[in-house]
Length: 489
Image 1 (tube, rainbow, N blue to C red):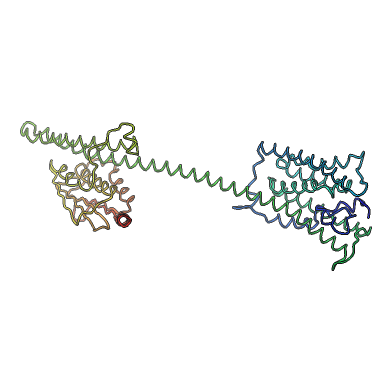
Image 2: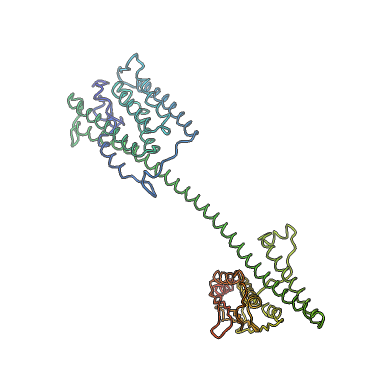
């Protein structure tokens, strides 16, 4: 058999070794693109979707400058390797070979097939079409260099892969793939028909099938694997990039959500501090005002009573200052260790809690208002947030009684409902004063405190007269945690 065949017979394989091992070595090897690829590519690409949505919803970003430089090096390197591969194929040929025009056409085409790879990621579809055309020309013009040069086969594979992986317009990519695959399939079928007419496929006929049928089936299988392998590998790379993009977007959204939560936490803390300041200032300033008015009225007739009132004013002002220092200290630093580092002195005065309710009631007595205190149930250790909230609720309720009510008596009741809840109740016997009401931030603050702690509140007039402020705060979660901690110890 001759070392080279007519172009129609020799340029039919993408992977030449299989055909070369058979008795059809004279045909120049195996065929290029598989024809079934034409319809198969249409079906396979038509239903491809990326994770999280359809393919048309996302466009892959173009290559970076570094990737473009890498493609340039790859294209030039493959061109040089193609020339070397052609020379090696020429040297290993058992007979004379046709080198084309001027004896250099084979070298030129071997290099030209690889050069479009310099733009495989920047212009993937253009590179694919250019490689396909040069691939076809090389197979027709210099079949020995086409069939015996693996670099040429690799260039076509990489062009298909890049088009599938990097094309931004997926519809154009599918249309281009169908065009290329159908064209190569037709070329492959033409080679089969030409080989049958020329009777160039011969062999010993030792198998179940004739040499020609074996040749056709083998080349179809190789080309289907070759072209579809490149396409699906590229589509997998595109899907991976799509999934990476989705994960990056989720990371950005998560970071934004975390920032929003942090801002919300700051706002909530500011609101909490504003409620604390409202409770502290409203209670102590109203008490100071009442005591100062009483002292002014009895200063001439009862100096001792005036001194007592002034002493109450002094104590209330100091307490207010200490409590405001505590709140402002929270604004300076959230970490006590940081307070020590920056030299902020620790506040010695204890923060208001349920255990200080008797002292709160004692300070509220006087100037026409009699306040009583009653504790029900066995005391239990309260979480700090619950204890402070109980104190602030009673403090705000007594402040409202003095400022906005005609009450003469009031009563504070603290109920310990086992380890399940604690309840504080403030009732009075008065009616609202006929005067402009306050900002109502006190009642809003009470409801917000109780709601944040998972409790319930009741604020409003009593059926028998007077006003009631009642708040019940659950303790079950805290008790469970305390038991778990004790079991761990």
